[in-house]
Length: 303
View (spheres, rainbow, N blue to C red):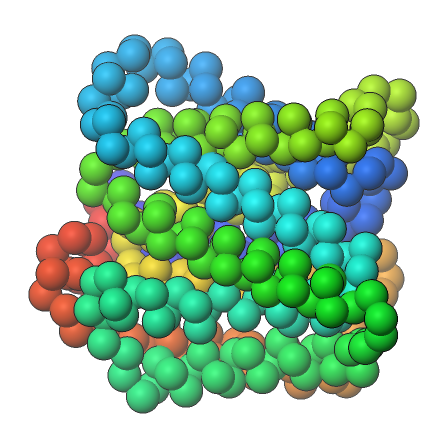
């Protein structure tokens, strides 16, 4: 079976785009939603990984355990910081700031792996970010409490970028299933402890809410994030990071189809810019031999 890397990336972006709709339909505290999302995903993946024997875990080197723990920490930080930022600043401001991680990933990837970014790639990043800003134009607010929220959203963007970068570091070292199982488990533990510490309950919600929590774990997390993690193993991490900017476009379309929320002119024009930016970055090819040897990114579908 030949697996097209761009199909994997597309499925990942479309799946994570469903998160906003499912969260909107779930009537529970945001930290509880985040904890359920990672916990259910870990509960599904761990037995599958263990069914293949403990050899998949025994093959993980000592230092790789540290890196996977760090990846789980960054993932939990991303959810916790971004969700918390929504309590202090507008959704539009938070979304724009949290999706600024491609710039962070591009800079770090340059220093870590020598991924020399062409002008076309840099132009694609700029165009995509401009599209995200245009989608959320008019929602920026500034007041006495917004500074903390904006800072938390920026830190959430850094956490997502770091999560992708650490995942890229382990592409040839750890089996993808073992990696996801352990990272989701580490992240779930952190979120569960945080939710309990905040005094939230995990019980007593409506059947509809529990259904949304299950779907949130299956679609955006198990399918979406797993595809994005797998995509990092097939292509440059910068490309995957920028492609995630397509999430606002997918979320807007799903919002119209499911919640009958018609997109505004800004959302339509901004969505076109995001897609144009992603297209420009898709034309990128790594120029570092070391990076090429580290991942099977050769321009052809994998078997």
